[in-house]
Length: 531
Image (cartoon, rainbow, N blue to C red; front, side, top):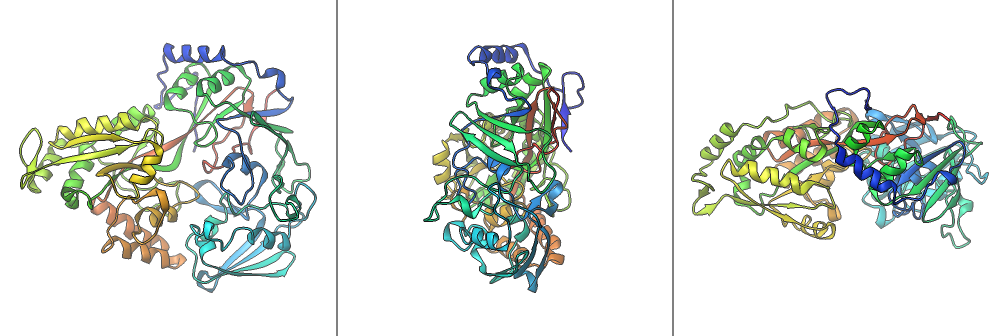
């Protein structure tokens, strides 16, 4: 459930916003021209940090949340990971997972009046499925063919069972549907024409305007217009929100809000909503680079030698829930709940003693110091340098020396896949990519996941468990995944730290706000406007 926080009703997640934060907001207000004059009556005004870009749903360039307004999937990813009807009303997976039968919704049209039917579905799939650029998706890599039964029924065939098949067809891209009439004669994309509840009427580098599609098949939005306005500076976004020039900000990809900014907004009386999120921040160990980390006792000592509550406080002002689990309970098949490790320096020191590491201030063994390098990227996780400094101090108390190497995003994307780290911070992929995206992408040694790198590699012991989960039947999948989780936990292969919260803020004008099921969605569905 979302957690709503206002200046009038606070609970254990109490914000402690200060005067300095309020002054920052006030200073930002003077930098912005008023946006009120441009406001459309009856329009929800949402801030985005960068221009929406090319919204072609079959490419990887546009802003997720804006594409979500226009284009729809066959299936929707709901809260708690439920697969819900979208452009498909019924479906079945047969032949051991190698055949997907789909019944399409009746009466659906694209914004240009083109019917959405089996022919339109086939045309869209042919623009992405089976292409090498999209083979990071199992449905694309294993695609074998498509048969049109009639205008409302299709059969999609695969060479092998597809892990996470239904989840893949909920993604924002490249699986959503574009009107066949919205391309040039050579097939090149021209304009964003989908079946969604919003139709784009204008787009610039400063703003995009959408109007409600009155022929939409489903429940129509409660307001006729939606504007997304580009405000790159976070102080400017906060000032615009407080002034009423913007109604809604937040989300990991739309217009991120830091915990400190959330405190400031809440102290100013702005409604702040904290969602537990489906992404986990994890610290990785690399035994391939450091002999000491091959020993589970050393990894366990580190796991119980760090204070997760302190990390949550530093990074998210206590708004993030600490964890010992790879996945949030909001993720489907997340497995049984393990206790969150509590810092125990005495037990940690005892484990290091048992492992043969002795001495002070830095322990050593066979002439080697227990010294580790922790790689951080502020561009990947803002504030992670401060978290690294907390961990550095805590592990030094145990006799483990930690040096911190800060890298930019590009360097991280080269160093992490090449395993140039001893310790490093990762984030799981989050819904709708879980649990399969992270389990396969971040743990299976034989799977090339590009720049994301690997959380932990053990080809002998872990790979067979992941492979078994990949090939398990639907009835066996939960138990097969649990074996992966148990192995990671029992061997202290990773150090889960906290669930990354989703943070949104809105004005009094917005009523009925609910956080989105994933960070890739725009949360407009339950909103009504109080004029």
